[in-house]
Length: 582
Image (cartoon, rainbow, N blue to C red; front, side, top):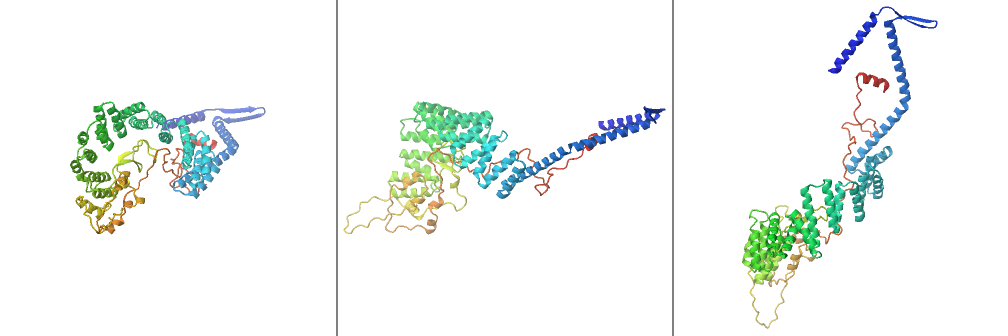
Protein backbone atom coordinates (compact mmCIF):
# COMPACT_ATOMS: atom_id res chain seq x y z
CA UNK A 1 0.00 0.00 0.00
CA UNK A 2 2.81 2.41 0.85
CA UNK A 3 4.49 1.78 -2.49
CA UNK A 4 1.26 2.64 -4.34
CA UNK A 5 0.94 5.90 -2.42
CA UNK A 6 4.57 6.82 -3.17
CA UNK A 7 4.05 6.00 -6.85
CA UNK A 8 0.98 8.27 -7.02
CA UNK A 9 2.87 11.06 -5.26
CA UNK A 10 5.72 10.83 -7.80
CA UNK A 11 3.23 10.98 -10.68
CA UNK A 12 1.61 14.04 -9.15
CA UNK A 13 4.98 15.75 -8.73
CA UNK A 14 5.95 14.92 -12.31
CA UNK A 15 2.64 16.32 -13.61
CA UNK A 16 3.04 19.44 -11.53
CA UNK A 17 6.57 19.94 -12.83
CA UNK A 18 5.45 19.46 -16.42
CA UNK A 19 2.64 21.98 -15.94
CA UNK A 20 5.00 24.50 -14.41
CA UNK A 21 7.45 24.13 -17.33
CA UNK A 22 4.63 24.56 -19.85
CA UNK A 23 3.39 27.73 -18.15
CA UNK A 24 6.74 29.50 -18.26
CA UNK A 25 6.80 32.34 -20.92
CA UNK A 26 9.78 33.39 -22.98
CA UNK A 27 12.46 31.63 -24.95
CA UNK A 28 15.70 29.91 -24.10
CA UNK A 29 18.74 31.11 -26.16
CA UNK A 30 21.95 29.12 -26.50
CA UNK A 31 24.94 30.92 -28.09
CA UNK A 32 28.40 29.56 -28.85
CA UNK A 33 30.51 31.86 -30.99
CA UNK A 34 28.67 32.36 -34.23
CA UNK A 35 26.19 29.60 -33.28
CA UNK A 36 22.91 30.79 -31.89
CA UNK A 37 19.89 28.62 -31.03
CA UNK A 38 16.58 29.76 -29.69
CA UNK A 39 13.84 27.43 -28.27
CA UNK A 40 11.12 27.33 -25.70
CA UNK A 41 11.62 25.84 -22.24
CA UNK A 42 9.31 22.79 -22.74
CA UNK A 43 11.06 21.89 -25.96
CA UNK A 44 14.46 22.21 -24.26
CA UNK A 45 13.41 19.91 -21.41
CA UNK A 46 12.15 17.34 -23.91
CA UNK A 47 15.42 17.40 -25.90
CA UNK A 48 17.42 17.12 -22.67
CA UNK A 49 15.46 13.98 -21.73
CA UNK A 50 16.11 12.41 -25.13
CA UNK A 51 19.82 13.16 -24.78
CA UNK A 52 19.96 11.57 -21.32
CA UNK A 53 18.18 8.44 -22.60
CA UNK A 54 20.61 8.18 -25.50
CA UNK A 55 23.58 8.47 -23.16
CA UNK A 56 22.20 5.75 -20.91
CA UNK A 57 21.55 3.50 -23.92
CA UNK A 58 25.05 3.94 -25.30
CA UNK A 59 26.60 3.35 -21.88
CA UNK A 60 24.57 0.15 -21.44
CA UNK A 61 25.67 -1.16 -24.85
CA UNK A 62 29.33 -0.43 -24.10
CA UNK A 63 29.04 -2.08 -20.66
CA UNK A 64 27.34 -5.16 -22.10
CA UNK A 65 30.08 -5.53 -24.74
CA UNK A 66 32.75 -5.09 -22.09
CA UNK A 67 31.20 -7.72 -19.76
CA UNK A 68 30.28 -10.20 -22.47
CA UNK A 69 33.45 -12.42 -22.11
CA UNK A 70 32.96 -12.66 -18.36
CA UNK A 71 29.30 -13.49 -18.76
CA UNK A 72 30.05 -16.19 -21.29
CA UNK A 73 32.74 -17.64 -19.05
CA UNK A 74 30.45 -17.61 -16.00
CA UNK A 75 27.59 -19.09 -18.01
CA UNK A 76 29.83 -21.88 -19.28
CA UNK A 77 31.06 -22.53 -15.72
CA UNK A 78 27.52 -22.64 -14.36
CA UNK A 79 26.48 -24.99 -17.13
CA UNK A 80 29.45 -27.24 -16.43
CA UNK A 81 28.73 -27.13 -12.70
CA UNK A 82 25.06 -28.00 -13.28
CA UNK A 83 26.04 -30.98 -15.42
CA UNK A 84 28.48 -32.12 -12.75
CA UNK A 85 25.90 -31.85 -9.97
CA UNK A 86 23.43 -33.70 -12.15
CA UNK A 87 25.96 -36.50 -12.65
CA UNK A 88 26.69 -36.61 -8.90
CA UNK A 89 23.01 -36.86 -8.01
CA UNK A 90 22.30 -39.67 -10.44
CA UNK A 91 25.55 -41.42 -9.51
CA UNK A 92 24.61 -41.52 -5.84
CA UNK A 93 21.19 -42.84 -6.80
CA UNK A 94 22.83 -45.52 -8.93
CA UNK A 95 24.94 -46.55 -5.93
CA UNK A 96 21.78 -46.68 -3.85
CA UNK A 97 20.16 -49.29 -6.09
CA UNK A 98 23.44 -51.11 -6.85
CA UNK A 99 23.95 -50.28 -10.56
CA UNK A 100 27.75 -50.51 -10.77
CA UNK A 101 28.15 -49.58 -14.44
CA UNK A 102 25.87 -46.55 -14.22
CA UNK A 103 27.53 -45.39 -11.01
CA UNK A 104 30.99 -45.62 -12.60
CA UNK A 105 29.84 -43.68 -15.69
CA UNK A 106 28.38 -40.88 -13.60
CA UNK A 107 31.47 -40.88 -11.37
CA UNK A 108 33.74 -40.35 -14.38
CA UNK A 109 31.49 -37.56 -15.61
CA UNK A 110 31.47 -35.88 -12.20
CA UNK A 111 35.24 -36.19 -11.85
CA UNK A 112 35.70 -34.53 -15.27
CA UNK A 113 33.21 -31.72 -14.69
CA UNK A 114 33.51 -31.10 -10.92
CA UNK A 115 36.81 -32.55 -9.80
CA UNK A 116 37.05 -30.40 -6.66
CA UNK A 117 33.51 -31.03 -5.48
CA UNK A 118 33.48 -33.08 -2.20
CA UNK A 119 30.47 -35.03 -3.41
CA UNK A 120 32.32 -35.93 -6.62
CA UNK A 121 35.12 -37.44 -4.52
CA UNK A 122 32.57 -39.32 -2.43
CA UNK A 123 30.85 -40.65 -5.55
CA UNK A 124 34.19 -41.76 -6.98
CA UNK A 125 35.13 -43.56 -3.75
CA UNK A 126 31.79 -45.29 -3.35
CA UNK A 127 31.67 -46.42 -6.96
CA UNK A 128 35.12 -47.98 -6.44
CA UNK A 129 33.83 -49.70 -3.30
CA UNK A 130 30.80 -50.98 -5.18
CA UNK A 131 33.06 -52.44 -7.87
CA UNK A 132 35.33 -54.04 -5.26
CA UNK A 133 38.33 -51.89 -6.25
CA UNK A 134 39.75 -51.37 -2.76
CA UNK A 135 43.02 -49.79 -3.90
CA UNK A 136 41.19 -47.06 -5.82
CA UNK A 137 38.79 -46.51 -2.92
CA UNK A 138 41.65 -46.15 -0.44
CA UNK A 139 43.42 -43.69 -2.75
CA UNK A 140 40.35 -41.48 -2.97
CA UNK A 141 39.69 -41.69 0.77
CA UNK A 142 43.29 -40.65 1.47
CA UNK A 143 42.77 -37.66 -0.81
CA UNK A 144 39.59 -36.82 1.10
CA UNK A 145 41.39 -37.19 4.44
CA UNK A 146 43.93 -34.56 3.34
CA UNK A 147 41.20 -31.98 2.66
CA UNK A 148 39.81 -29.86 5.47
CA UNK A 149 36.15 -30.22 4.50
CA UNK A 150 36.16 -34.00 3.89
CA UNK A 151 38.76 -35.16 6.42
CA UNK A 152 36.35 -36.93 8.77
CA UNK A 153 34.52 -38.67 5.92
CA UNK A 154 37.83 -39.79 4.43
CA UNK A 155 38.90 -41.25 7.78
CA UNK A 156 35.66 -43.16 8.04
CA UNK A 157 36.17 -44.61 4.57
CA UNK A 158 39.72 -45.67 5.48
CA UNK A 159 38.36 -47.20 8.69
CA UNK A 160 35.86 -49.33 6.76
CA UNK A 161 38.54 -50.44 4.31
CA UNK A 162 40.82 -51.40 7.21
CA UNK A 163 38.01 -53.48 8.68
CA UNK A 164 37.54 -55.27 5.37
CA UNK A 165 41.26 -56.03 5.27
CA UNK A 166 41.13 -57.39 8.87
CA UNK A 167 43.62 -54.72 9.92
CA UNK A 168 42.43 -54.19 13.49
CA UNK A 169 45.45 -52.09 14.47
CA UNK A 170 45.05 -49.77 11.49
CA UNK A 171 41.32 -49.46 12.04
CA UNK A 172 41.64 -48.43 15.68
CA UNK A 173 44.39 -45.94 14.84
CA UNK A 174 42.15 -44.31 12.23
CA UNK A 175 39.22 -44.22 14.68
CA UNK A 176 41.39 -42.61 17.36
CA UNK A 177 42.53 -39.98 14.84
CA UNK A 178 38.87 -39.28 14.02
CA UNK A 179 38.08 -38.83 17.73
CA UNK A 180 40.85 -36.23 17.99
CA UNK A 181 39.28 -34.29 15.12
CA UNK A 182 35.68 -34.71 16.26
CA UNK A 183 35.02 -36.03 19.80
CA UNK A 184 31.31 -36.19 18.95
CA UNK A 185 31.86 -38.72 16.15
CA UNK A 186 29.59 -41.62 17.06
CA UNK A 187 31.16 -44.29 14.83
CA UNK A 188 34.70 -43.48 15.96
CA UNK A 189 33.89 -43.53 19.67
CA UNK A 190 31.91 -46.75 19.24
CA UNK A 191 34.81 -48.40 17.41
CA UNK A 192 37.49 -47.27 19.88
CA UNK A 193 35.34 -48.29 22.84
CA UNK A 194 34.79 -51.76 21.37
CA UNK A 195 38.47 -52.27 20.60
CA UNK A 196 39.58 -51.17 24.05
CA UNK A 197 37.08 -53.47 25.70
CA UNK A 198 38.30 -56.34 23.51
CA UNK A 199 41.88 -55.71 24.62
CA UNK A 200 40.85 -55.45 28.27
CA UNK A 201 41.85 -51.78 28.45
CA UNK A 202 39.12 -50.84 30.89
CA UNK A 203 40.72 -47.55 31.92
CA UNK A 204 40.86 -46.45 28.28
CA UNK A 205 37.27 -47.58 27.75
CA UNK A 206 36.14 -45.56 30.78
CA UNK A 207 37.95 -42.50 29.37
CA UNK A 208 36.11 -42.90 26.06
CA UNK A 209 32.83 -43.20 27.96
CA UNK A 210 33.54 -39.96 29.83
CA UNK A 211 34.33 -38.28 26.50
CA UNK A 212 31.01 -39.50 25.06
CA UNK A 213 29.18 -37.97 28.01
CA UNK A 214 30.99 -34.64 27.56
CA UNK A 215 30.21 -34.64 23.83
CA UNK A 216 26.54 -35.32 24.48
CA UNK A 217 26.49 -38.70 22.71
CA UNK A 218 24.81 -40.44 25.65
CA UNK A 219 22.56 -39.25 28.45
CA UNK A 220 23.32 -39.47 32.14
CA UNK A 221 21.27 -42.60 32.75
CA UNK A 222 22.92 -44.54 29.92
CA UNK A 223 26.32 -43.30 31.10
CA UNK A 224 25.76 -44.68 34.60
CA UNK A 225 24.67 -48.06 33.24
CA UNK A 226 27.57 -48.36 30.79
CA UNK A 227 30.10 -47.24 33.36
CA UNK A 228 28.77 -49.89 35.75
CA UNK A 229 29.19 -52.51 33.00
CA UNK A 230 32.82 -51.53 32.40
CA UNK A 231 33.62 -51.47 36.11
CA UNK A 232 32.02 -54.90 36.56
CA UNK A 233 34.09 -56.29 33.67
CA UNK A 234 37.27 -54.90 35.21
CA UNK A 235 36.35 -56.36 38.61
CA UNK A 236 35.74 -59.81 37.13
CA UNK A 237 39.10 -59.72 35.37
CA UNK A 238 41.03 -58.59 38.49
CA UNK A 239 39.18 -60.84 40.96
CA UNK A 240 42.07 -63.30 41.25
CA UNK A 241 44.91 -60.83 40.58
CA UNK A 242 44.12 -57.68 42.58
CA UNK A 243 41.20 -58.21 44.90
CA UNK A 244 41.35 -54.72 46.40
CA UNK A 245 40.96 -53.03 43.01
CA UNK A 246 38.32 -55.59 42.04
CA UNK A 247 36.35 -54.93 45.21
CA UNK A 248 36.45 -51.16 44.72
CA UNK A 249 35.39 -51.48 41.08
CA UNK A 250 32.48 -53.83 41.73
CA UNK A 251 31.20 -51.75 44.65
CA UNK A 252 31.09 -48.68 42.42
CA UNK A 253 29.51 -50.76 39.65
CA UNK A 254 26.71 -52.04 41.87
CA UNK A 255 25.89 -48.44 42.86
CA UNK A 256 25.65 -47.38 39.22
CA UNK A 257 23.88 -50.53 37.96
CA UNK A 258 22.21 -52.36 40.86
CA UNK A 259 20.39 -54.80 38.54
CA UNK A 260 23.53 -55.99 36.71
CA UNK A 261 23.74 -59.70 37.48
CA UNK A 262 27.56 -60.25 37.37
CA UNK A 263 28.16 -57.15 39.49
CA UNK A 264 25.57 -58.26 42.07
CA UNK A 265 27.04 -61.78 42.29
CA UNK A 266 30.62 -60.59 42.74
CA UNK A 267 29.64 -57.82 45.17
CA UNK A 268 27.64 -60.32 47.26
CA UNK A 269 30.68 -62.61 47.30
CA UNK A 270 32.94 -59.84 48.61
CA UNK A 271 30.36 -58.78 51.20
CA UNK A 272 29.91 -62.38 52.32
CA UNK A 273 33.64 -62.78 52.78
CA UNK A 274 33.59 -59.59 54.88
CA UNK A 275 30.75 -61.13 56.99
CA UNK A 276 28.27 -58.50 55.75
CA UNK A 277 25.53 -61.07 55.21
CA UNK A 278 22.52 -58.77 55.29
CA UNK A 279 24.07 -56.34 52.83
CA UNK A 280 25.01 -59.19 50.50
CA UNK A 281 21.45 -60.54 50.63
CA UNK A 282 20.01 -57.09 49.79
CA UNK A 283 22.30 -56.77 46.79
CA UNK A 284 21.22 -60.15 45.43
CA UNK A 285 17.53 -59.51 46.12
CA UNK A 286 17.58 -56.21 44.20
CA UNK A 287 19.13 -57.85 41.15
CA UNK A 288 16.88 -60.94 41.44
CA UNK A 289 13.66 -58.94 41.30
CA UNK A 290 14.83 -57.26 38.09
CA UNK A 291 16.44 -60.27 36.39
CA UNK A 292 16.15 -63.75 38.01
CA UNK A 293 19.33 -65.68 37.24
CA UNK A 294 20.79 -69.01 38.49
CA UNK A 295 24.02 -67.30 39.58
CA UNK A 296 22.02 -64.98 41.82
CA UNK A 297 20.24 -67.93 43.45
CA UNK A 298 23.54 -69.71 44.00
CA UNK A 299 25.11 -66.57 45.49
CA UNK A 300 22.09 -66.13 47.77
CA UNK A 301 22.29 -69.76 48.91
CA UNK A 302 26.00 -69.48 49.82
CA UNK A 303 25.83 -65.95 51.21
CA UNK A 304 26.53 -67.30 54.69
CA UNK A 305 29.54 -69.55 54.90
CA UNK A 306 29.21 -72.81 56.83
CA UNK A 307 25.45 -73.30 56.40
CA UNK A 308 24.09 -76.78 55.81
CA UNK A 309 22.39 -77.86 52.60
CA UNK A 310 18.95 -77.67 54.26
CA UNK A 311 19.62 -74.10 55.42
CA UNK A 312 20.65 -73.16 51.89
CA UNK A 313 17.40 -74.71 50.62
CA UNK A 314 15.34 -72.59 53.00
CA UNK A 315 17.21 -69.46 51.93
CA UNK A 316 16.60 -70.19 48.23
CA UNK A 317 12.91 -70.79 48.92
CA UNK A 318 12.75 -67.37 50.56
CA UNK A 319 14.37 -65.76 47.52
CA UNK A 320 12.10 -67.59 45.06
CA UNK A 321 8.99 -66.53 46.99
CA UNK A 322 9.73 -62.88 46.20
CA UNK A 323 8.52 -63.39 42.60
CA UNK A 324 4.77 -64.03 42.16
CA UNK A 325 3.47 -67.02 40.23
CA UNK A 326 2.23 -64.92 37.32
CA UNK A 327 5.61 -63.27 36.71
CA UNK A 328 8.08 -64.38 34.05
CA UNK A 329 10.87 -65.15 36.53
CA UNK A 330 8.82 -67.56 38.62
CA UNK A 331 10.11 -70.64 36.79
CA UNK A 332 13.71 -69.60 37.46
CA UNK A 333 12.98 -69.58 41.17
CA UNK A 334 11.44 -73.07 41.04
CA UNK A 335 14.50 -74.44 39.24
CA UNK A 336 16.72 -72.85 41.89
CA UNK A 337 14.65 -74.58 44.60
CA UNK A 338 14.98 -77.92 42.80
CA UNK A 339 18.76 -77.48 42.55
CA UNK A 340 19.06 -76.71 46.27
CA UNK A 341 16.68 -79.56 47.18
CA UNK A 342 18.79 -82.08 45.28
CA UNK A 343 21.89 -80.85 47.12
CA UNK A 344 20.00 -81.30 50.39
CA UNK A 345 18.77 -84.80 49.35
CA UNK A 346 15.16 -83.54 49.46
CA UNK A 347 14.17 -85.42 46.32
CA UNK A 348 10.43 -85.29 47.01
CA UNK A 349 10.61 -81.52 47.23
CA UNK A 350 12.63 -81.37 44.00
CA UNK A 351 10.09 -83.54 42.17
CA UNK A 352 7.29 -81.39 43.51
CA UNK A 353 8.65 -78.11 42.11
CA UNK A 354 9.64 -79.72 38.80
CA UNK A 355 6.31 -81.47 38.26
CA UNK A 356 4.66 -78.56 36.33
CA UNK A 357 7.56 -78.48 33.85
CA UNK A 358 8.27 -82.13 33.01
CA UNK A 359 5.63 -82.42 30.29
CA UNK A 360 7.47 -79.83 28.17
CA UNK A 361 10.88 -79.68 29.84
CA UNK A 362 13.78 -77.43 29.06
CA UNK A 363 17.33 -78.75 29.10
CA UNK A 364 17.89 -77.76 32.73
CA UNK A 365 14.66 -79.42 33.85
CA UNK A 366 15.56 -82.65 32.06
CA UNK A 367 19.08 -82.65 33.52
CA UNK A 368 17.73 -82.07 37.01
CA UNK A 369 15.32 -84.98 36.59
CA UNK A 370 18.17 -87.15 35.33
CA UNK A 371 20.20 -86.25 38.41
CA UNK A 372 17.25 -87.06 40.68
CA UNK A 373 16.78 -90.50 39.09
CA UNK A 374 20.48 -91.27 39.32
CA UNK A 375 20.98 -90.01 42.88
CA UNK A 376 17.75 -91.14 44.52
CA UNK A 377 17.23 -94.59 42.99
CA UNK A 378 20.48 -95.29 41.19
CA UNK A 379 18.38 -95.82 38.07
CA UNK A 380 20.85 -95.36 35.23
CA UNK A 381 18.28 -96.23 32.57
CA UNK A 382 15.78 -93.53 33.53
CA UNK A 383 18.60 -91.07 34.04
CA UNK A 384 19.84 -91.89 30.56
CA UNK A 385 16.36 -91.34 29.13
CA UNK A 386 16.06 -87.93 30.77
CA UNK A 387 19.49 -87.06 29.44
CA UNK A 388 18.36 -87.91 25.92
CA UNK A 389 15.32 -85.73 26.41
CA UNK A 390 17.63 -82.93 27.52
CA UNK A 391 19.42 -83.17 24.19
CA UNK A 392 16.15 -82.60 22.34
CA UNK A 393 14.54 -80.24 24.84
CA UNK A 394 14.03 -76.54 24.46
CA UNK A 395 16.89 -74.26 25.34
CA UNK A 396 16.95 -72.37 28.60
CA UNK A 397 17.67 -68.64 28.79
CA UNK A 398 21.28 -67.76 28.10
CA UNK A 399 23.47 -64.70 27.69
CA UNK A 400 22.55 -63.56 24.18
CA UNK A 401 23.67 -60.55 22.13
CA UNK A 402 23.04 -59.93 18.42
CA UNK A 403 22.29 -63.62 17.78
CA UNK A 404 25.47 -64.74 19.61
CA UNK A 405 25.03 -67.07 22.61
CA UNK A 406 27.74 -67.08 25.26
CA UNK A 407 28.29 -69.38 28.22
CA UNK A 408 29.25 -66.38 30.36
CA UNK A 409 28.43 -62.69 30.55
CA UNK A 410 30.55 -60.30 28.51
CA UNK A 411 30.60 -56.51 28.53
CA UNK A 412 30.48 -56.04 24.74
CA UNK A 413 28.99 -57.96 21.84
CA UNK A 414 31.63 -59.85 19.81
CA UNK A 415 29.46 -59.37 16.72
CA UNK A 416 28.90 -55.60 16.70
CA UNK A 417 31.09 -54.35 19.54
CA UNK A 418 28.02 -52.84 21.25
CA UNK A 419 28.44 -52.18 24.96
CA UNK A 420 26.01 -53.82 27.41
CA UNK A 421 24.51 -55.93 24.63
CA UNK A 422 24.20 -59.29 26.45
CA UNK A 423 20.79 -60.05 27.91
CA UNK A 424 19.64 -63.09 29.87
CA UNK A 425 16.94 -64.43 27.57
CA UNK A 426 15.95 -67.44 25.51
CA UNK A 427 17.87 -67.49 22.20
CA UNK A 428 15.63 -66.56 19.30
CA UNK A 429 16.84 -69.48 17.18
CA UNK A 430 15.62 -71.97 19.77
CA UNK A 431 12.05 -70.64 19.98
CA UNK A 432 9.38 -72.69 18.16
CA UNK A 433 8.05 -71.01 15.04
CA UNK A 434 4.59 -72.51 15.16
CA UNK A 435 2.46 -75.59 15.60
CA UNK A 436 4.24 -78.85 15.03
CA UNK A 437 7.71 -77.56 15.78
CA UNK A 438 7.96 -79.34 19.12
CA UNK A 439 9.92 -82.60 18.91
CA UNK A 440 8.20 -85.48 20.60
CA UNK A 441 10.10 -88.04 22.63
CA UNK A 442 10.94 -91.31 21.00
CA UNK A 443 9.25 -94.57 21.95
CA UNK A 444 12.46 -95.73 23.60
CA UNK A 445 12.54 -92.70 25.91
CA UNK A 446 8.85 -93.04 26.78
CA UNK A 447 9.32 -96.72 27.59
CA UNK A 448 12.30 -95.99 29.81
CA UNK A 449 10.48 -93.22 31.69
CA UNK A 450 7.30 -95.30 32.13
CA UNK A 451 9.10 -98.40 33.38
CA UNK A 452 9.54 -98.85 37.15
CA UNK A 453 13.02 -98.81 38.62
CA UNK A 454 14.75 -102.14 37.97
CA UNK A 455 15.31 -104.51 40.86
CA UNK A 456 18.87 -105.52 41.50
CA UNK A 457 18.68 -109.36 41.57
CA UNK A 458 21.76 -111.53 41.54
CA UNK A 459 21.45 -114.02 38.70
CA UNK A 460 21.76 -117.71 39.61
CA UNK A 461 24.62 -119.63 38.05
CA UNK A 462 23.61 -121.46 34.92
CA UNK A 463 25.30 -124.10 32.89
CA UNK A 464 24.52 -122.37 29.59
CA UNK A 465 26.58 -119.30 28.86
CA UNK A 466 24.69 -116.09 29.38
CA UNK A 467 23.97 -113.99 26.36
CA UNK A 468 25.99 -110.80 26.28
CA UNK A 469 24.00 -107.67 27.02
CA UNK A 470 22.93 -105.62 24.07
CA UNK A 471 23.81 -101.95 24.36
CA UNK A 472 21.27 -99.59 22.94
CA UNK A 473 22.74 -97.36 20.28
CA UNK A 474 23.00 -93.65 20.95
CA UNK A 475 20.42 -92.00 18.70
CA UNK A 476 22.43 -88.74 18.58
CA UNK A 477 25.59 -88.95 16.44
CA UNK A 478 28.60 -87.30 17.98
CA UNK A 479 29.25 -85.24 14.88
CA UNK A 480 25.83 -83.61 15.12
CA UNK A 481 25.68 -83.10 18.89
CA UNK A 482 25.18 -79.38 19.54
CA UNK A 483 23.89 -79.71 23.09
CA UNK A 484 25.48 -77.96 26.09
CA UNK A 485 28.53 -79.55 27.80
CA UNK A 486 26.41 -80.67 30.77
CA UNK A 487 24.15 -82.62 28.45
CA UNK A 488 27.05 -84.31 26.70
CA UNK A 489 28.74 -85.23 29.98
CA UNK A 490 25.58 -86.67 31.47
CA UNK A 491 24.76 -88.52 28.27
CA UNK A 492 28.04 -90.44 28.37
CA UNK A 493 28.05 -91.47 32.02
CA UNK A 494 26.29 -94.84 31.97
CA UNK A 495 25.32 -97.16 29.14
CA UNK A 496 21.73 -98.34 28.96
CA UNK A 497 21.19 -102.08 28.81
CA UNK A 498 18.27 -102.84 26.58
CA UNK A 499 16.09 -105.95 26.84
CA UNK A 500 16.57 -108.99 24.61
CA UNK A 501 14.27 -107.45 21.97
CA UNK A 502 14.98 -103.73 21.93
CA UNK A 503 12.18 -101.42 20.96
CA UNK A 504 12.71 -99.96 17.50
CA UNK A 505 12.27 -96.22 17.25
CA UNK A 506 9.44 -94.80 15.25
CA UNK A 507 10.59 -94.10 11.65
CA UNK A 508 8.68 -90.81 11.54
CA UNK A 509 10.40 -89.63 14.69
CA UNK A 510 13.76 -90.89 13.47
CA UNK A 511 13.53 -88.64 10.43
CA UNK A 512 13.53 -85.55 12.65
CA UNK A 513 17.09 -85.88 13.86
CA UNK A 514 18.17 -83.99 17.01
CA UNK A 515 20.76 -82.10 15.03
CA UNK A 516 18.14 -80.71 12.69
CA UNK A 517 15.86 -79.67 15.54
CA UNK A 518 18.47 -78.25 17.88
CA UNK A 519 19.67 -74.81 16.76
CA UNK A 520 23.38 -74.42 16.21
CA UNK A 521 24.90 -71.43 17.97
CA UNK A 522 28.30 -69.94 17.40
CA UNK A 523 30.81 -70.01 20.25
CA UNK A 524 34.05 -68.11 20.71
CA UNK A 525 36.68 -68.61 23.37
CA UNK A 526 37.55 -65.00 24.04
CA UNK A 527 37.14 -61.44 22.93
CA UNK A 528 40.72 -61.04 21.73
CA UNK A 529 39.61 -60.12 18.24
CA UNK A 530 35.96 -59.09 17.98
CA UNK A 531 34.12 -60.09 14.88
CA UNK A 532 33.15 -56.90 13.05
CA UNK A 533 29.60 -56.21 12.09
CA UNK A 534 28.58 -56.85 8.49
CA UNK A 535 30.30 -54.06 6.58
CA UNK A 536 28.17 -52.35 3.93
CA UNK A 537 29.38 -52.19 0.37
CA UNK A 538 29.66 -48.41 0.60
CA UNK A 539 29.65 -45.85 3.36
CA UNK A 540 26.11 -45.00 4.49
CA UNK A 541 25.48 -41.41 3.41
CA UNK A 542 22.77 -38.82 3.46
CA UNK A 543 22.11 -36.13 0.87
CA UNK A 544 24.21 -33.01 1.42
CA UNK A 545 22.29 -29.82 2.22
CA UNK A 546 23.43 -28.15 -1.02
CA UNK A 547 22.51 -31.10 -3.21
CA UNK A 548 19.69 -29.97 -5.56
CA UNK A 549 18.34 -33.50 -5.87
CA UNK A 550 16.10 -34.54 -8.77
CA UNK A 551 13.24 -32.62 -10.28
CA UNK A 552 9.91 -34.38 -10.52
CA UNK A 553 9.58 -33.35 -14.15
CA UNK A 554 13.21 -32.55 -14.92
CA UNK A 555 14.96 -33.10 -18.26
CA UNK A 556 15.99 -36.63 -19.09
CA UNK A 557 19.31 -35.57 -20.63
CA UNK A 558 22.08 -35.42 -18.01
CA UNK A 559 23.75 -32.58 -19.92
CA UNK A 560 20.68 -30.35 -19.93
CA UNK A 561 21.56 -26.92 -18.63
CA UNK A 562 18.58 -25.98 -16.51
CA UNK A 563 17.85 -28.10 -13.40
CA UNK A 564 15.76 -25.78 -11.22
CA UNK A 565 12.89 -23.47 -12.05
CA UNK A 566 13.36 -20.40 -14.30
CA UNK A 567 14.18 -17.12 -12.57
CA UNK A 568 11.32 -14.61 -12.68
CA UNK A 569 12.18 -11.14 -14.03
CA UNK A 570 11.92 -8.49 -11.32
CA UNK A 571 9.54 -5.57 -11.79
CA UNK A 572 9.62 -1.82 -11.06
CA UNK A 573 12.74 0.31 -11.39
CA UNK A 574 14.90 -2.67 -10.45
CA UNK A 575 13.53 -4.60 -13.38
CA UNK A 576 13.97 -1.64 -15.67
CA UNK A 577 17.61 -1.23 -14.76
CA UNK A 578 18.24 -4.99 -14.88
CA UNK A 579 17.01 -5.06 -18.47
CA UNK A 580 19.56 -2.47 -19.48
CA UNK A 581 22.47 -2.90 -17.14
CA UNK A 582 22.29 -6.64 -16.29
